[in-house]
Image 1 (cartoon, rainbow, N blue to C red):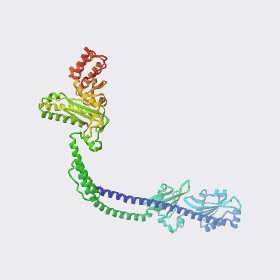
Image 2: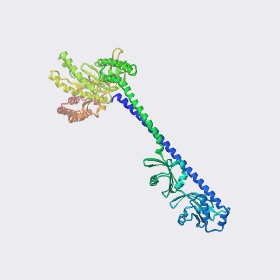
Image 3: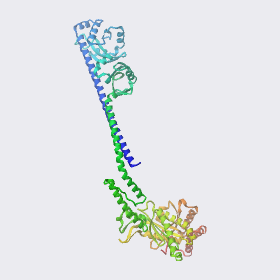
Image 4: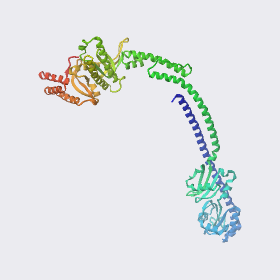
Length: 637
C-alpha cells in the first residue's frame, strides 16, 4: 500500500471514527439524560397523584366527621337503629362517594348507599378487606387504597361513637370512591394528555382504570410481571416507554399502578439535531478527503524518491543522487540523504580496500567506532586455532615460485572460507600457517565448538581438494590443527603508526604447540582440556595423552577431535573406547598389557597414535621411568 493511500485511509478512518464517536456519545448522553428526566417526571407525577388523592380523602374525612358529630346523628346512634340508610345517602352525596356503608361492633351492615341487593352481597363477601376491626379496636379513623373483589378503591373509615369522649367505637362507617377511568381522567387532567403520560391502575393483575388504548393495556398486563418495580423500561410496537411501577401492599405484587411515557417520542427533537450533525459531518468529511488526496500526493512524491534511494543503499549502490529542491523538511532530508551517500561511498571504499588486509568484522568495528583505533587491549576468554601444512618445506623447494604461490593461495583461500563460515576471525597468515580466533564481540555462542567445527570442515575440504591437486601434478597436502581455549589479551597491538588487531598470551602459544604435537601422534586435530569441556557433548573426542610442553611446569591432558557425534562411525567410537582403555593401563604403569592393546589397535586400524604409544610402552618396558606419573615431557616446541 502506497503512502498516499495510507494517508488517505488514515484520514478517512480517524475522521469517520471521530464523527461516529461524536454521534454515539451525544446520542448516548442525550438518551441517558432524557431517561433520568422522564423517570424524575414520573416520580413527581406519582407524588402529585398521592397528594391529590390524600387531599380528597381528607376532604371526605372532614365532611364525614362533620355529619357524624351532628346531634341528630348521635340521637339515632344512641337508639341503635337498624337502618342508617339516610345518613349513608347524605354522606355519599356530600362526598361524591361511590359507596358508603356502616357496620356495628358485630360487623353487621346497618346502612348502605346505594342500597342494592347485589352491592350488599359484594360488601358482605369482602368485608374483611376493610380495616373495620382496627377502627373498632383503636377508635381512630383509617384511610388508604383497598383491593377487593376485583376492584381498586380509595377508602376512608371512621369510628362511630356514642360520645365524642369515648375511646371505643360502637360501629364504623366506610366511605369508598372507586378507582376508574373517570377518576384517572379527573386526576391527570387535560394538561398532561396521554401522549406524555399513560396511567394504569391494576388489581389482581387486571386493569381497573387507565387512560390508554386497549392494545397498549393488554400488552402491559401480559408483561406486567416482567416490568420491574420502580423505574423501568417497556417496549411496545417498537417504541421504548419509561415506566414507574408501584404497589399498594408490599406483600402483594398484583395490585398497584404503572405510569409510562414514550422515550422515543421525547427524543425526536434530539434525533433531528443528530441528523443535521451527521449530514454536516459527512459534508466536512468529503471536503477533508479531497484535501487529504491532494496533500498526500505532495508528500508522497518526494518520499518516493527517497525510497528509491534507500533501496539503492540496500543493494550497495551508492552511485546516484536525489534531486529535490524544495525548502521544506523533505528537501532538507534529501540533502542529508545525499550527504549520507557520499559518506557511504567513502566508507565502502575503505572497507573494501582494508578488508583484504584485515578481517571484515574488525574493519566494520573500527569504522563504526573510530575512537577504538588506539594501542591497547583487554583480557578476554576465547578459543584460538593454529594450523600448518605438513612437510611444506620439503615440497616447496621442488616447485616453481609461481606454482607454489598459486597452490598456497588456493589452500589458504579454502581454509579461510571455512573459518569465516563458522564466524571465526582470521588473525594472520604466517607463511603456510594460519592463526584464527573465536570470541566476543565477533562470535556469539559456543566459540570452542565453532572453532572445532571449523577445523573439521577444513580437514573435510582438504580431502576434497587433495585429489584435484594430485590430478594436476601437485603435491599431496596434509594439514595439522591445534586448538586451545582460555584467557588472553585481545586488542590493537603495536605502535601508534603501525597497529595489528590480534591476541597474545600463553593460550595462544599453547594452541601453536598443540598443532605441532600432531606430528608426534600422527593426528589431524588436537585440542586442550578447556576446549574439550566446552565441546564434549557435541563432538566425539579421544583422549590421547597427558603431556608437559616446553615452557610449562605441569602436564595437561590433550584430546583428538574424531568427528561430530551425529556423523561419528562405529569404528571411530570403538577406536576411542579401546584406545582409552589401553591409555588407562599405560598410566597405571602396566606397560606390557598396554603395549599389546596399542599394537593390536594399530594393526587393526592403522592408527598412528596407537603406534606411537605402543613404541613408547616398549621403551618403558626396557627402561622403566622413575617416579612414573603418566606425564610425558615434550622435548621439542
